[in-house]
Each structure stands twice: as C-alpha cells, then as structure tokens.
Image (cartoon, rainbow over all chains, first blue to last red; front, side, top):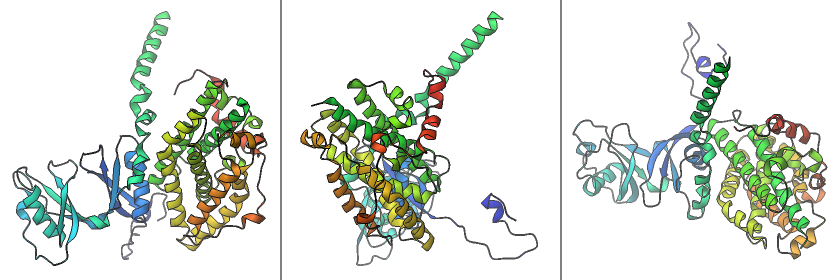
Length: 204
Length: 251
C-alpha cells in the first residue's frame, strides 16, 4: 500500500508475512536547558538528529526560540541511564543497590524527577565507575529528604555542552516578543471587532 | 564626511538581509525536517530584524520610514547583491547560499564592531550571538552533508558551482570605497573577501567538497547599483502585497 502518510505505507500487506521494516528516522537526543545563571539544567524534551553536533544546532531553535535561557546541552538518548520508577512514598533510591565498584572513575551528571509528570532536574555531579555506582553515590550526596521518583545518570564526556564563547547565542532573545502569541493581542483585536459588529448591527 | 557614503553602506547591508530573510522564510512549512524548518525560519526572522534596525538607522539619517523603504521601492532601487534574490531552488542550493552569504555577513559585522560610526558598531556587538548561531548552523550542515552520501555531496558541489559567481558579487565595491575605508566606517570589500575566502576554505576542507578555483570564476556584479535578475521584482511584489493594499494594516 502506497500512501503519503508513512505510517500507512509501513503497514503490512494483507496476507503477507514479512520482517518488520526499520524506521527511516534519525535517533533521538535529549535536550537540557538552563533558564538562568545559577539555576540547574532541566530536561526539556527530545530531538531527532543524525548526530550529536546536529542535535545541538537543531535543539537550540526547537527548544529555546521563545523563552529566555543562558545555556543548553544535548546527549544521545542511549547515553541516559534510567533508574526504576517509583510511586507514592517510595524513593527510587531505595531500589538502587550497590554496584560492583570498578577501578576507573568517570564524571557522571545526576538528574532527579521529584514530581511525577514534571521534568528531570540536574541534582549534581559524582565520580563513579558505572551509572549504578553513580546513582549509589548520588543517594548519599543528594538523595536525602525528598522522595525521588526517578533518577538519571549521564556520563559527562557524552554531553555536548554550550561552550563559553557560545553563551551569547541567546543575547537578543528577550527582545523577540513577536514569537509570543500574546504579543499579537488577539483578545483585544477580537473585542474591538465584536464591538464594531455590534455598533454596525445596531445601525441597521 | 558626506552622509551618502554611510547611507550607501547601510542600504546594501540592510537590503541583503531583507531580501534573503524573505527568501529563506519561503521555506517555512516546507523544511526538510521539522527542527530544521524551525531553525531556518528563526534565522530568517533574525535577518528581517537586523535589516529593520538598519532601516531605522537610515531613518534617523533622514531616509523614509522603515516600512516605506522596505515595501515601496522598485527592484532597481535595491542595493542587495544578486545572490540573495535568486529563487530557493532545492534545499542544497539554499544551504550553500546560507553558508556562503552568512559567512560573509558574520565577518562583515565582526569588522563593523570597529566602525567609527557608533550606532553601527553598537548594532554589530548586539547581534553577534545571532550571527554566531547562523554560521554555526551553516557550517554544521555543510560538514554533515558535504561528507554524507554520494547524492548529498554531488548536490552541494553543483550548487556551489552555481552560487559561486553570485557569491563573489557580494564583494562588489562601492564608488565610495576609499572614503568608507579612510573614514574608518568599514575596512572594505577587498579585506572582507580575503577573510571570507579563508573561512569558507576552512570549512570546505573538512568535507569531500572542493572549492571552485576562484581566480577563474567571473563575479556577477550589478546588484549594488540596482541591476538585478528577473527574480527580484516578483519577490518585492509578493512581499509588499499587504502594505500596498493597506499601509496601516497590522498583523
């Protein structure tokens, strides 16, 4: 079946048994945004791209073309290690068991989901030999108090950061009000139009 | 100094940005990827915004209001190079033009941060980040597709050959070139061209593309003195359609 909609084209033909075709799409990359200096980075969403550098370039406009920010970074989705997800009063940290600690240590960034349905927020950095080891150390350093429903660990070297000289990429963003729907004052225009219609119809 | 010298420089930079901004905006909704569609459209908006700032500067120097200047002139009154008015073609051509033009544009503004005309130097510093993104975007795409598949490489190579005579037209010298340089307003088209060649060579050398021998490419001049291809007037007609029906329209 040929259709302009790729989802239809991918459907198997009736009566035909074939291996499932792989998707003709790029892999995904996770995008993190820092709204203000001193604020933690927050996960904003994912982007399709052929590689890390392209992901950075495309993420910049896809995720930060409206709201002001000072920095972003991206990482291949496959480099994000995810803890079990918990509910109620159980913290995901309770389900992390001490991993066998290897000799070689690397820097890992740790992210917390502290409200279901919200974004993962950067909690801090640790030196660890594996993602599990990183979460174990994070448990002691950042895991006290609040219930954490999900933990992410990302090896720092896998992240494409914003360099110091690229910090000015967002300099003029606060002036670009024309990208906000509110700047077009649609409500005011509608009110004016309706009042004019009323006046016109009263004349008749 | 004669103000016409300054005005001529401002007009050609502004017209380049307005016309290419409009051309690039024609990709909105048709980009090859959703994310790229957004990025290309944003950069088109940046270009229109930059041209607006320059038309405001011209307005302060006694020229007509930005909207009048943008929408009411005919093709022969525009000073943009012909490169920016050419139709979009396929994405390979648009990308090559984006790369060739934006590299020159970013270098021009970098030079203008030193301009003796203070409003221009201030604007150059203000938009530095926008320009940095434009060249980062262009370079990343050229490096990506310039080394990807046989098709992507040959498409970019063909577009490079078509665009190059027009790209050299960016550097068409003004009759006031000496005064502009002597007055410290801008270090001149020849200096810009020298820096531009070094930059594009640097990127192209990281791909499987090859730069045409610039010594045997004949530049297409004329744009800076109002001589344009048949493509500019239809663009202007479309761009100014609403303004010409109702100059007070808001949208």
